[in-house]
Length: 603
Image 1 (cartoon, rainbow, N blue to C red):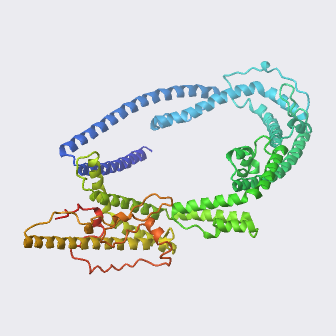
Image 2 (spheres, rainbow, N blue to C red):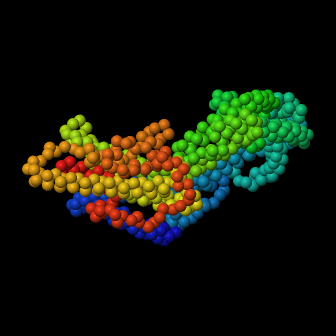
């Protein structure tokens, strides 16, 4: 055992050393990334070593104190154990050599149970010597039904210096037989009485009246209680219990069916919590098994009648409120679909449901069940679309920043020292960095959408339009916008050249003024919070001479091209042909949106 402990500690030490080295390497790597100097690293390493030494020193002192305390405790326990063993005639449990080889905690863990057993055994033997004869007389009287006469226990005397088992075995043999017989009978009687009491409590019956049919004193307490453990009592209890269990099973089935109907009506009628709270005590029956029902009066006749009356009342009310419930569930379905940007099922639109209910061709319950199924389906679809929808929201947020940045760049007073100007400058810098990520965001969204469609073999629709089509048009619109900007720059250079030639020819230069045909405000898009969540870009962002279409985000696209690209098709992976574009536009079509500083009108 000692060798195994040393080996185990050696393996633990090796493992700890390996872990410490790995943590030290990781710590040094972190310091290097932070940029700590070598002197700071050495200082921190010395602090770590000093802390480790203090911890070890503290643990050694604590271990020495614990060792001394264990020595004293083991010695005291062994002395008491030796005295008890001498009294009971027992021999030592282990030799001194084994004691020296055994750790102190193991010695203590071995001594304490033995010592406790010896104490209990001594007390038990003394008690048994005093009570054994009286117990034999009393048990015999109870089993035979004869009147019991108390024995004088004070007449028994015990020699506590000699408590061997040899003197006790002759009495115990007969006593154990009587005790077993009495224990079995008494346990059966008590279990039977408890079962009767529990069943009467659940069923709302009179326990005293029920148990009196078996024995008139089984339900009484006090000195006059006469516990009858005869065969007649046991048979009578078994018969009563069987009858009560049968009644409990019938009432349980009846109340469970009634509560299930009550739940359906509550859900159908959208009953308030106050109405449901009145029957909260009986509704728990649906979650319990028959054997687990222990609440007082839960299966009473009154409780069942009250529940049945509520079911009858709601059933009468159901017919008059069915149309309202159908419309309410339909509004809930439309709200779920609106948040998920999916198209609700048109088979249950209010116009159709109203016509069907009024005509009587379809049962209102069937319509309601159909809408409930559609709600469950819409919720499930919202969950599987959540990842793509989060990425769309991120894209739209960056587009909002792009719109703000374009407006900011058109503001000629943006560099004036005004209130909040520094905040706008910081936001503009952050917006430029965010807008530069738009190409990656769009490409990632397209790839994720393709993966989603391939996995489920269905197109990902956003308000009825395929998302990939929206992203295609968005990228194409960005390219068209860049082409328009390039064309305007070329026109401006040509105009400046003509102005220069005119100046050389006539010797004068016209006053510089901004030309309306070269309005630098590029086309863009806004995502304003209208009633349905979608608006088209404002016309103020279109230049007079520009025919560039608006940037199409899902919110602006859905209102303009609803129902477009219904067929399932994938975005072509071949690059678009941009040969017609000028060589000046070699940069990405997306990065130019980041809002470079506008040129001077005369530059």
